Length: 554
Ligand code: GLN
Image (cartoon, helix red, strand yellow):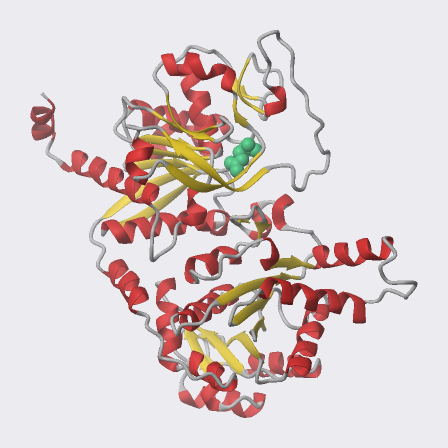
């Protein structure tokens, strides 16, 4: 039978609850358990797909094509067996959608439909569905205890604790223990209040994970234990760490997993975290640094491209260098030119939507192409690479994507429904006007051309990567761009262009898919490994004294 661990948060949001849940999953997995991970989100959007990255950070895409909360990215990076999917993320909107849908179909047989029991029952059903047949299901409840929005979720998990028994259900509460610098004191009061709030709705936590700047002194742990009715041995200190991937090791060393497996009556071998130790060690041993310019939108918020930042970091650990990402708003390139790219060892244009900043990205691509700086384009980054090549190498003046300019004379990127056939007819399919769920989403096969850079980097003829976009390379322009020197090295099974590259350039590759979603700290990702290695070579070329370099080149 599956055991359930519910992770709630108190005092403030952005406590790193997702990473705490994922780290716990990593430890339990290392004890031989299969793990499923779920995120419950209190907001009313059915999924985060239509939200700006400024709202909740990146939209993570699962293999089965769900647009999900970024915490699912942490789960997948930390817990190999978890494989989050469509049924790993439930929002209030999705729950209500299901309840109201059922009501409209007459599924409640005339009953008055209410939050309790109908909404809470739907939440419980969803958790059971997402848990599957894993040994342990870890469910993170988004939001902060005390929010009105979280109440139905908390009520549902309270009921699960009662119905399944506390030998099968455990509650972990993550809170903040702030340090007040002026009085040099560690304050436990907010944690006491948060647990009081949780207990007032019937949930007594079994474990507290206290987030703090520095390790929590025993005296404070004792105090928290006493006032919250949680045994001292179950109050854990999660201090700020400079390496995310060291958190499972830290929590395991304090015995977090032990408290929970004991509660579940499980007798298991100790956790083997040697792979995590290697990851941390690799991070510590990095020497030197390469700088990657990430030119895009939403650069103010680090979480907008969290999977991408992580993927670059994974590759850095594997290559033994620190990867510093210089986040550059593409509008800055529009206004000030490419000076802001001075000194970078690689350029990356990530995914994005809408017209703003596109011309700056195009200029960044021109710079990388002409100066032979390694370039990686992802999704929108592939589309702007195609636009740049069409305009500046192929001579298709004003080439563009129909997303940015509806009447462009050369729609080198367009909706498939807008590709014009030989007779000039636009083939139109019925499009759903609903903005949610109209995209090409999730994992699809991509075949890589023999002899291409993509094939060399991946080392395999067919790869499976995730998509999230509406627009496609317009195959009508394939021949003319090919003649001008653009390499088409990846195609989907149904012939859509997935990867382009420049054979005349040391390392220039752009993909329509998002490789960052499948990079993990333990296994890395071959495309990012290749990109970072190319950045290192570029730096080394630049490091050579000018004379030696020109002699070498002669
Ligand atoms: N806006 C582009 C499209 O919809 C690219 C999307 C993306 O980069 N994820 O096709």
